Length: 155
Ligand code: HEM
Image (cartoon, rainbow, N blue to C red; front, top):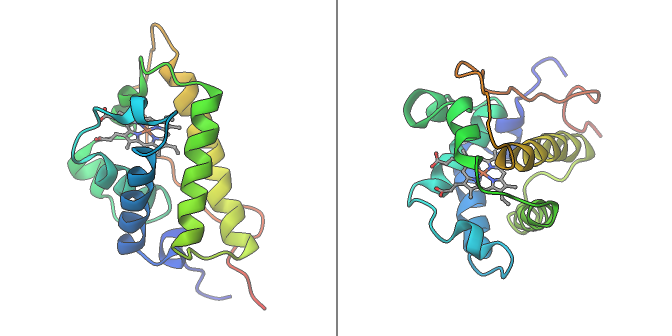
């Protein structure tokens, strides 16, 4: 493939990420385990997470230029004392939502999508349990690519 799309483009662009987090956090608030964790989230939370993930996958820099930074995102998890059970449930509901919204399901896209989510959710749990976090305030936004497959599925 001469012009390899970004993961953001392949997923369908910003409306897809915004729909994904919109529906996902609606589920989260109905979930017995996760509702207490997110009960006090800000009104902008779901939009910020959509923008954050979109940027990681090669989309526009809405989060890092207007809404936060990687440092700020890490900060938001500190002190939340997340557990592996929280993480597993968060991931399960997000993937369920991705399926419901028919995000691309080619092996290449889903392997990159899951790789980032595994990495990001595990870091969120670690950071949420640090008593005295020393975070680099200039921590760059992660940039996720296609990994070993190198691009989307080609029949
Ligand atoms: C790839 C994984 C994750 C990403 C990209 C992510 C992203 C974010 C972002 C961008 C914010 C800040 C939102 C804002 O600026 O308003 C945030 C806050 C937060 N995240 Fe995550 N997160 C991830 C995983 C998790 C997990 C697994 C949990 C818990 C199960 C979690 C719980 C929270 C909570 C409680 C907040 C603070 C909400 C508030 O009170 O406003 N996050 N996350």
